[in-house]
Length: 130
Image 1 (tube, rainbow, N blue to C red):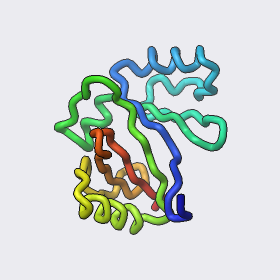
Image 2: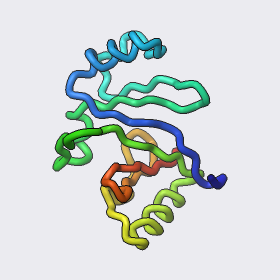
Image 3: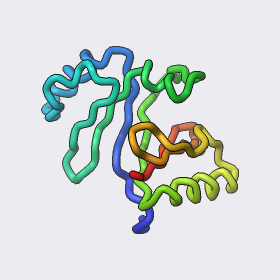
Image 4: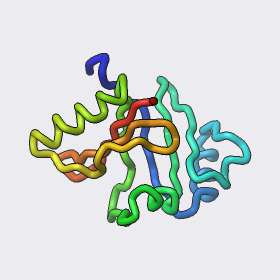
């Protein structure tokens, strides 16, 4: 892994955030109290990683065509060192023939964001804080 990129988070989409958070709290994750009504929730994992939940409604706000995939639906998230790196890595991977899941955009939560597909169709999201 280079200094430009660092795996940072695992993202999950849920139809029932309260039920999902309850499940993971039961597994010992320290999830902020009162977060059950939020559209996006994060919990720190050992080693500096994060587990993140987004409601399906929130995902559809920036990807109206999103539909729940069958099977595994977790998303790998890669922290980039700068917003320009999001665009560079997206261009590098799509130029190499990998699919784009989401063109780079400036997200309302303060990140530069994009998505690519691995060879098995798993989405890998690229982001950098602005």
